Image 1 (tube, rainbow, N blue to C red):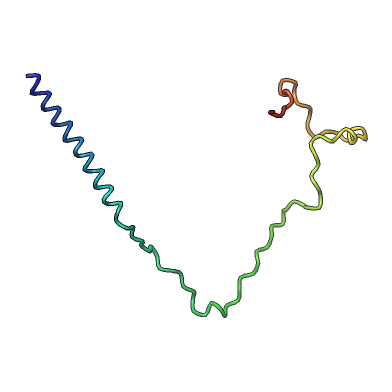
Image 2 (cartoon, rainbow, N blue to C red):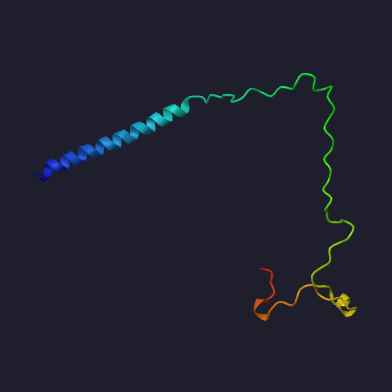
Length: 106
């Protein structure tokens, strides 16, 4: 009885292997065919008389832009500026957030 189920399982396994080999062969055969190029939409054409129509005006820049004449200032001024009375924009970092200096890898 055990040999009959072994033969049946072997037959099923060999059929599955043959099916897989057949699918691989079919895929390789389909890849040999040159790809077809299809154009989805027709190319755009200009409207008749478009050359004689006036061009659109240039876009108006928004009124609320940052003035570019004022340079940005650093958050922490250098020591000479601090001696002259410049205040840092940010408070000093807490001690637990200050780490070791970065050392170059050599």
